[in-house]
Length: 181
Image 1 (cartoon, rainbow, N blue to C red):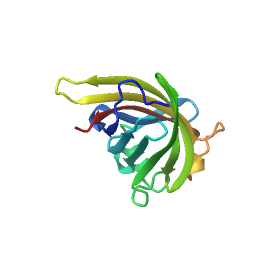
Image 2 (image 1 turned 90 degrees about the horizontal axis):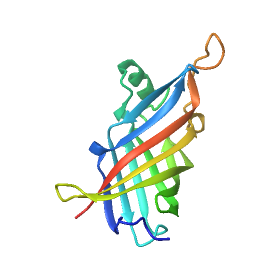
Image 3 (image 1 turned 135 degrees about the vertical axis):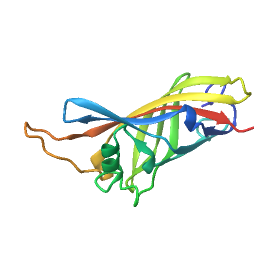
Image 4 (image 1 turned 45 degrees about the vertical axis):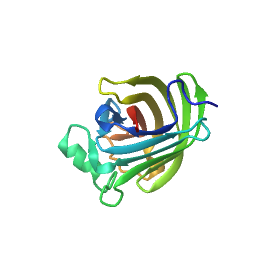
């Protein structure tokens, strides 16, 4: 299967300044809390076919930011990411299918030292050349995981029933890649 229209063969690198790697989790059963990672590297090695193309990504777990310093410290600590012991989250693509604007990207996601297969639903947002001559490609993607599957089991019971942090975590990506010259 051919690569998306406009995406040329070669190496494409994540432009983290124009990207967001985030997630959403339900808090106390009534609201959603969002967080993002501000430091990451990713490379797409686009070949003539989807089957021969490669995607590898590394996210620095200590770059987590939810906008609340106390929550961020807790999430970075041993109850969740344990950034001292597990400094990165990793993703390696293993298969991509689809066409046009809609794709399914399968791969292995490593969080907290646990590697599991996941599938992202991906939207290809196109390719453009910016005013500075850089060729850019944009993608949006999402998946939902069980944090417990990755060993992130901390929680607190609520007086009215239920738990403080949901098991389901929605991962969302809005990313830009720049083609190497």
